Length: 221
Image (cartoon, rainbow, N blue to C red; front, side, top):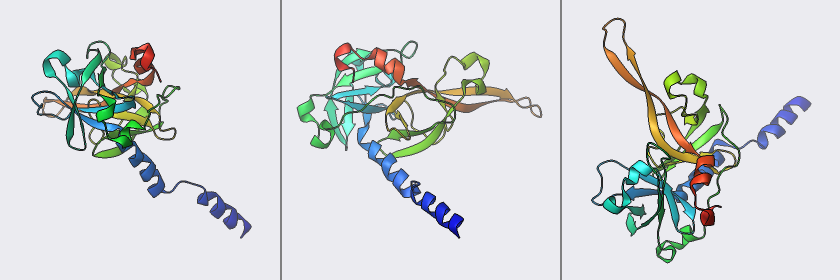
């Protein structure tokens, strides 16, 4: 009986699925849509960092002077200024600024923190877009084909998790681990038909360490 009581006491301190889900959903406040002008046919995402600054993947915005990106919060578009623009081939990040006084008060009061420690294989993460959060986990680069192992920060679930510009958060610390950049695919030839098929095997995200280096000095949190 004593052992049963001890086990029961231990389980009482474990987070319930509902509490974990509520904690994950609290991250939804940071997620936004990013629209080009005119609006693109595919969804683009971004993450609020604080002080009117939003971060997204560079290829979501493209050339900002041409696409005139807008941040979308609760269905309302906000004009942006491009603070810093990367590229898909180099650092796939772009920073956008919105006049802070225009933003909803619930957002103005928030600040997002970057994770200090690099992600480890097997670590649980939460991917975040405005519509939902989805849990996944960090994959070891050794599980990738040799030619793409340079993309060392990858997650496992391709089909359900957020696409370009969405946020990848540490499931325990709630800090930002990275910004989703691209899918990693592998082509395989079927022995029975000789047909080549392409399968998505992982998603790469730009890690917090690269985000920290990309941020201008006056914006580093």
